Amino acid sequence: MLELLATQIVNCGLCPRLREHCAAIAATKRRAYLDWEYWGKPVPGFGDHAARVLILGLAPGAHGSNRTGRMFTGDRSGDILYRVLHKTGFASAPASLRRDDGLTLKDIYITAAARCAPPGNKPTPEELRNCRPYLERELDLLANVRVVVALGKIAFDTYLSVLKSRGVVNGRAGYLFGHDRHYEIAHGQPDLIASYHPSQQNTSTGKLTERMLLDVFRRARKIAAG
View 1 (cartoon, rainbow, N blue to C red):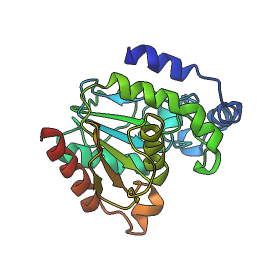
View 2 (cartoon, rainbow, N blue to C red):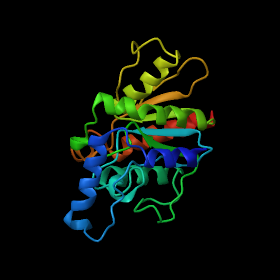
View 3 (cartoon, one colour):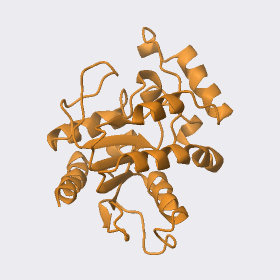
C-alpha cells in the first residue's frame, strides 16, 4: 500500500505553483549538476515499511531531493542526517547520494510535510494542507511507529495539527517546539521528539551540531526499543 501511495504522491497536481517551480528548477539545473536528469516531481517517503521511528521533515530541497527523488538526499541537510542515521544504526551507509545507490534504512522511515520543493523553502499554509492527507495515510500504514522525530517547527506543527484533527490532543498548549524536546502523547500514539532542522543555516552557525542530532536519534532508538 505504501508503494501505491508513493505513486499517488509522485503524480499529485494539487499545488500548481509548486509543480511549476520544481519543473523549472529541473529544466534550468544548477551548474554543478548539469549532467543530472533532475527528478522535478513530488518526492515520496523512503525507508523501512516496518519502521518504529518516523522522521518528518519540511520539504524537498530544490537541488537536493528535487534533483535526486529521495528524501534528504543530495544536499547539506541530508549529509549530516544520513551520517547520524548510519552512526545510530538506522542507515546502511553514511551518505545518501541518489535513488539507486543501494542505501537502505532499517527501523526508520523518512517523509515530509510538503512533497514538492517550495520557493524559498516556504510552502504556503494551503500547500501544507493539500499535502497533509498523504502524511495521514502514511501514519495509518506505518503501523509499527513508536516515535516521530519532527525536524523543524513546521514539521512539528504539522504533526500536532494531525493529532488535533484526530482528537488525540486538544490543542498546542503544552507542546512547545525546542531541540530534543520529548513528548509522550496520549491514547497510545507514538511519542514525539522535536529537533532543529539540519539545514545548512542551522549547522553552519552551530545552532545544530552533529552531536546534538546524534542525541536525538539515540533517544528515538531507546524509545522505539522501549
